[in-house]
Length: 171
Image (cartoon, rainbow, N blue to C red; front, top):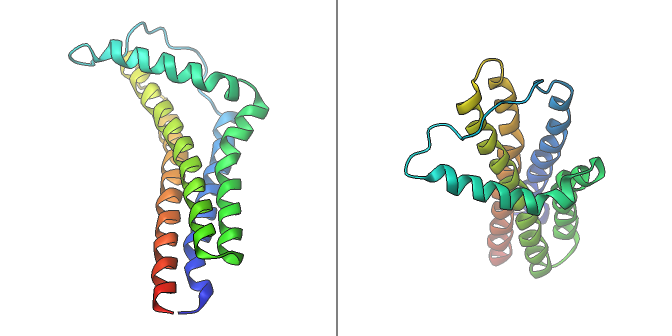
């Protein structure tokens, strides 16, 4: 197996991450107008509404310093693509151990941003359960795209590290 064949996984992760980053900006032009007048989170059983409310408050408190400005949001959502690009370059020119370390760090960065998007999607879903679904479903689906894109980038990075390890074992 030629040395460069394992790079297709890193390149696929880079494409998925870059497309997820680009998918973020189009919906900002078409955001639904008007705030929902909800005080609760819809039909959550067994006191989960209070637990979710507390988790949401803590997550937003952690996220606020980074994503409160346009530059911070750009950094938060651009960091996965930059880290995957760095992991791809290191994987192409460095040894396996360094490539694995940088790949794992890149996968962690991308996973954190994917979890951030998952949290935002769940919050939006809970708000829709309370405020109504009319006209807001396309926006929810569009918010799922970065979550799935960054999640697939993590899977492809891990697959690339495994393929490289197997390829170097054969050689």
